[in-house]
Length: 501
Ligand code: TNX
Image 1 (spheres, rainbow, N blue to C red):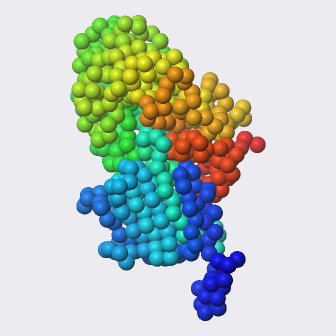
Image 2: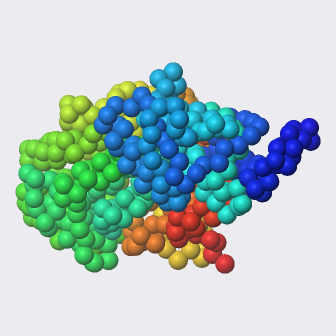
Image 3: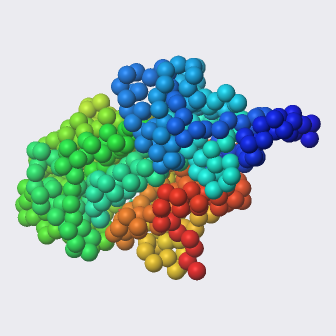
């Protein structure tokens, strides 16, 4: 009450400008991922539609790309931001090396808005927090009025990923960009693309052109497939990078390789190319461990892939090689792991790779087996924890969900949220976990609307697990926050799951 006195006396002088009440800052408590500390302060700042902004501490190239994305994203909020130099800008974006790489500090007071990050990525995540606030307040009278606040925040994990399987059904670059635009609001920083499987090969490899001209022709169900040219792929990588998302390409081996085997007879042990495959059963294909050409092939593929990848990781698959002899499996996986390392990259593989040579420069991705994951841990590997039962967003929500699979059980919104990467496998220490991933396999997913329906809103839960520390997370509180985010998803025109009834 005492605090409101000066406010009302000021209003007596400035009747018009006080017609709108100040924001109460409720939006800051509804953020997903939940921020580490949020301290409300007195006062507020009203963002003008043509507000000025300034960037400090960015290299010229970083600033160019940040300008572009900032003004693009601002326009979604009806803002046409203009660049100003120095202290007079309403929105100050600063790289502040005293903060950790992805950490940020967002401060608002009567004079303006300050977004500080330990790197351009940190500044960008602060901007996403501001964007969420604007979205959450958009329908209120205080749409552009921002309550004074100090938010200090940083991620729990460095690998906060979404996977899209573009092999079972192909999704073109504009569809993938649309997904990037959606997940970036939730501070996801990695997009893993499953680029090759039995049903299709989706990335042009110059030395092995049939992989795409033949192996990319079809997809599950027999409809036309597709692939990315290297030029299109480079463009996609750059688009993601501008939004601080690193693309991790995956070529699955030695199983899940029918599309490659069908494209080149010489890759088959018997020299006979199988037909293209458009079903959904897995585990019937394998590269041939005894042939020299298998290793030439793998080397060529990963060499080109490394050139297309500015990020640190290349994913070698390694799952469900049911028709590969164990010795052969180990030989081919070890070759792929070493090839990726020789190219200066860190290999990632599904948890079965624990049978191979792993060390601290290898990442094992838990999807099904605690035993494999413990084995990988004991060999010194880093870990991504993305269990099918919690993180496979291709699982149906419930029995009424029209698309999706159910082999790992139904996956309601609660179950996709209510778990912790460091609580799943006994005997592993949390320091070795680099993060988590929400995965969308696409056997049953054919359109962009299908992607949205299975991803949203469950992906918000996994994004929060990657960012917010476990002691701050709580299912009931999350559900309340999620409720307010549905209108954010509506504004973004995302066709999310609204319940099966
Ligand atoms: C298991 S996850 C697979 C994929 C399927 C998925 C369907 C993994 C490493 N293998 O090949 O698409 O289940 O949910």
